[in-house]
Amino acid sequence: MTERRLTPARAGLTAFLVAFVTLAVQVLVHRMVAVKLVNNFVFLVISLTMLGFAISGVVPTRWQAALQKRRGDVVAAVTRVRYAAP
Image 1 (cartoon, rainbow, N blue to C red):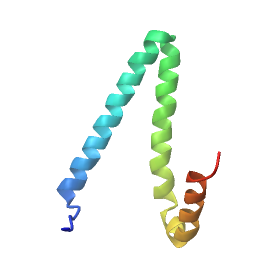
Image 2: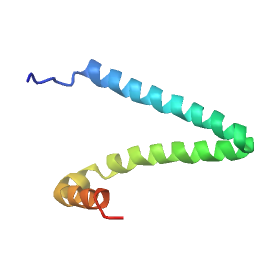
Image 3: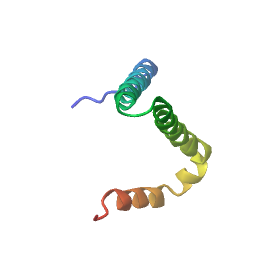
Image 4: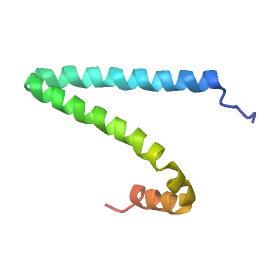
């Protein structure tokens, strides 16, 4: 199998596609919830979702050095949470 490198152009395209799909899903969810619920509640749901996306980007960036030092512990913790029995 050939190795495919992540070039800056490919990384940019991937980031654009992920952002575009995320925003498209947000608009779709907004439309679906707006039909069923009050419009103000829809903006609350969308705002909290966008806040979650922002925090998921800030946390790894802010504590990148600490996470890299404890990479093994972090991977083990995430794996335990992911595969924990319900």
